[in-house]
Image 1: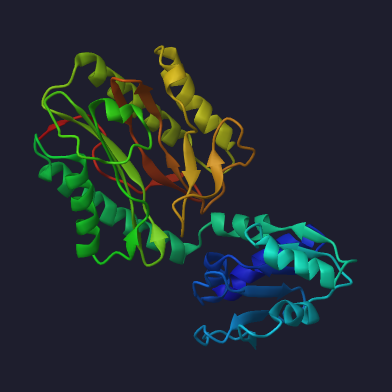
Image 2: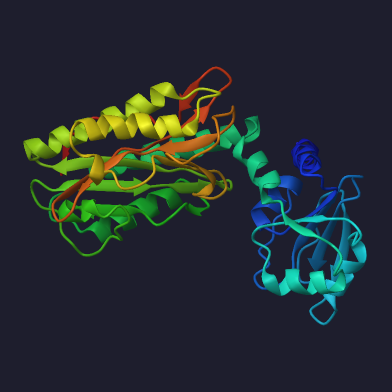
Length: 357
């Protein structure tokens, strides 16, 4: 599995005219080797070479990896960048990870002043964007947990509860299901707070007629889920109920279009046009979706400016919204997996508005 992933990265490097790359993102190193460590401020690097002589550069404080690549060890008191510089080929261009700190990159460039350092993160990020079957199953599992927790939460909510109480309940449910962590802290928004797409839950109490926007996700076995549903406490304002229907329809229209080869910008346009036709275009204030995997937001987006086309294995969100400042907000979000024939929607919680609490 890991060899196949590295092969995809090396093929992409070759298309860039590169024979070597330094990968520093811990999630990318895990993706390519199965070895994970959080380096904090210390150097951690995977050196990939076209000839297959890959090397892991590791501080002696880190655990010994169970992977077949040569390990180059150093301590806090060693000149570790000099050690790294001695192993890379300073006569050829080298690909650099977008996340590699300048405090590491600039000294390496001083050791090899004639070496061209090129941003090559796309070689890894594009490989990570198209999930293999192992990853697809992990994403399905994380989304199944998210479905379960969303349904439990909808049954738990009562008038008079605070946003913070509900967010804490969600976090506790993920822990009960054995999740690693939350993918991000849950967004729970009542009433006018729903008009802020990234509102942080506070002590606001739920009252009759409020919309309830819940955007939440867990991290299970390293992979993330993400979903948004909007409910109402009691009977909603008819205008707000109609806007919810509009947003749900936009979500479904975009999902029906997902298939290999479709430009991602067309998905955004289809959802945005539907909302604009009803007069709410200016209130849909963000892109339609983002890519997801080991992190809640990974490289790639679904927006009017997106240049990519959908490819099998891609997993991204479809999350249109309408936000009326000072009054109300609604968002409906699923994760979708691009399959070889079309699309698999990973979330199954009913998207029609309903009264709870």
